[in-house]
Image (cartoon, rainbow over all chains, first blue to last red; front, top):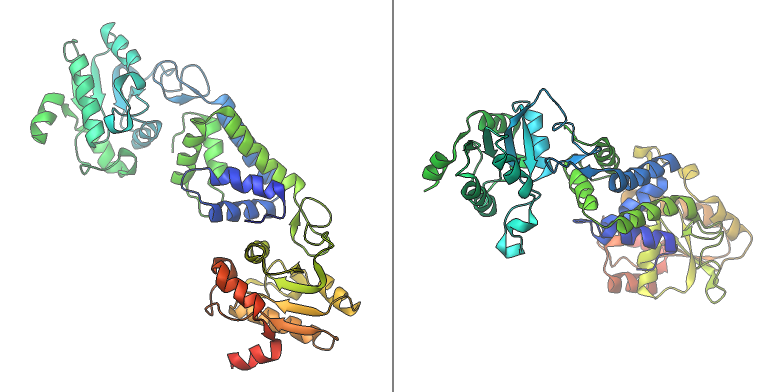
Length: 207
Length: 207
């Protein structure tokens, strides 16, 4: 492409590196931004810098946060002995939106996937095992997506935690097998939190 | 949505205001950026600020430029008496990519569209008429898209320019009626520039 401005070219190049955005879309977005007020573009630009500079991971659960402890972990009215283990930050948002869960979370930051070379050591697992070993927890709810990788990860954690004196449960599978958690509707998701079953019985249902 | 970080929320909000990007996609992009190196995110952020601050419109043709005159208008080896009139900056890029045109451009910045309330006074037309009145031009090629609005705009300019002592031509319609210029393949587009026909004969072909 012949760009008449090197700044336009640079912007198209940078925008085009975002996932799912090709060169035509990047150009369309750049030309859109050119037509906007400067404050609007500066607002977007600042929001991106702030995002990277100021957002950190919660020391306790791995959720995104503006402070060392996220709002959920820092909230004394939540049940800190009840932990919901999820793959991803988006899953925390999805469950929080149902308003049905009063415990805290543990965000793994992914799932075990030999195909993509992701093993247990690449995930945020240690903190969870430490909390369990200290006897701080009464129940752990597994809320990974019901994909092959999600199930593998759940089973791995189950094996690591089964000897501890705590209840291990899995969210009820009202959600179709193979679906991602974040796309489920809120009612189904809320029900799957409320109707959680002991992990052993969820294993029996699968086989 | 419950965002655990207000900076994340702000970023999702800003990204989600871009055309064609919904909230789910905005969140996916924000989380993608969070996983990138700071230099990468700062690069994107700076590119957007530069885009808005440093890119201006060429004083002569209305194309995007880093200087007062764009590279094409400032190039003495191009034929400044041959002007190709296009709707949009993207059309300039598309024609430049064919490498078949050695004249200069005139970017209207849109087409006449009563439906959207866009009249001739909203377009960059005055500069073109002035150039023609000064006798600086030998030929004007109309290269608007072959949509209803494009044809209307072409006809409007034809009426304004028909009494001047210059050739008025239209790019050959190898392009399907109703299609936008920017999506045409380069060979078809190059041929339509080379095989341009007098505007009067293109009118006869249409009726």
